Image (cartoon, rainbow, N blue to C red; front, side):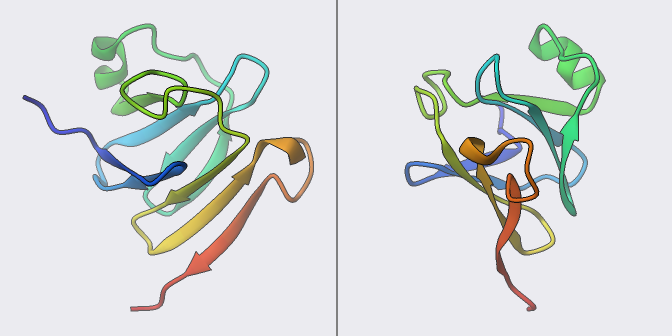
Length: 109
């Protein structure tokens, strides 16, 4: 059994837990793909890996939100906690605006 580089918490929270593996978050075909790095989140415009082997070669983990092993359906609101102790709020209803990705909480410890 392999260990995923992220944890799912509650109904809409992803916790990034491995520095050497970035996360590609895919919510739906219409929504932008996000890259979760150890110190933040950015929009991803590159090629999306077709399978797990290709993703491993790119040092990323593909997180399909609607997949049964994750949340099972589309999420309009998602929270992502990165390794730099920041929790980001991703509001897909505000995509294309400055409020699409915002810092929700920040820990300083």
